[in-house]
Image (cartoon, one colour):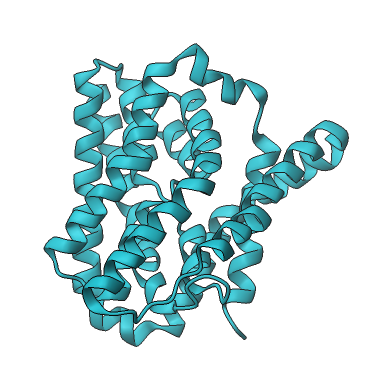
Length: 286
C-alpha cells in the first residue's frame, strides 16, 4: 500500500479537527494582545526556517535532506502544541490563537519559501529535485484550508456532530501522527537508520537553536513565564504530517527522501518537548 494514501487523509483529518476547535476569538488575539502573537509568528514563520537553512548549509546536507529540513521548519505545529502548553501551565489561549493564525499564514508562506529553497538547491547542485509550486498551493487548499473551513461550518450548522467528531478526533490525532511516522519509518528504515545520526543531529541543532532564539525573544520583550513557555513550545512543535504530505505527494515533490527529516523530527520533538515541559514545571515549583 502506498503510504501517501494514508498521509493525505490524516493531514485532512487533523486540519478538520483544527477547524472544529477554532473560534472567532482565536483570531481576535492578534488585536487584543498583538505583541506576543507577532513575536511568536515571526519566530515560527521567519526565524525557524532561517535557522533550518543555516543548519542545513553548515552541515552540508545532501539535497533531499536539505530541502526536507527547511520543509519541516516551515510547517508550524497543529493542535498538539495546545496540549503541551496545557501540560506546561502555559498560556493556552495564546497557543490556540497561534495555531489558528500560523495554519492559515503558512498556506501561503510555505509555497514561497519552498520554491526559493528548491530553486537555490537546483542552481547549486543541479536540478535533481522537481517541485511544483502551483500543485502545492492547490494541495494546501484542498487538504488544509478546505478541511478547516468544513470544521468551522460544522461548528456553526451541525453542533451535535461537531462535538462528537471532535471527541473522536482528539483521541486519534496524536496516535494517527505517530502511525504515519511509523509507517514511513518502516518503509524507509534502512535509509533512516543509516542517516539517523546525521539527520538526528541536524534536527536537534535546529530545535535547540529555534527554542533558544524563542526564549531570548521572550526575555527581550519581558513576556511572562506562561507566555514564554507557550512560545517556546509553539516554535518547537512542527506539523510533521503536513511536511510528510508535501514531500511524498505525487503532485508536489514526490520524493520520500525529503520526508526523512520530518519523520525523524516527529519522533524527536515529542521527547524534546516533554523534557522541556518536565523541566519547566520543576523550575516553577522551586
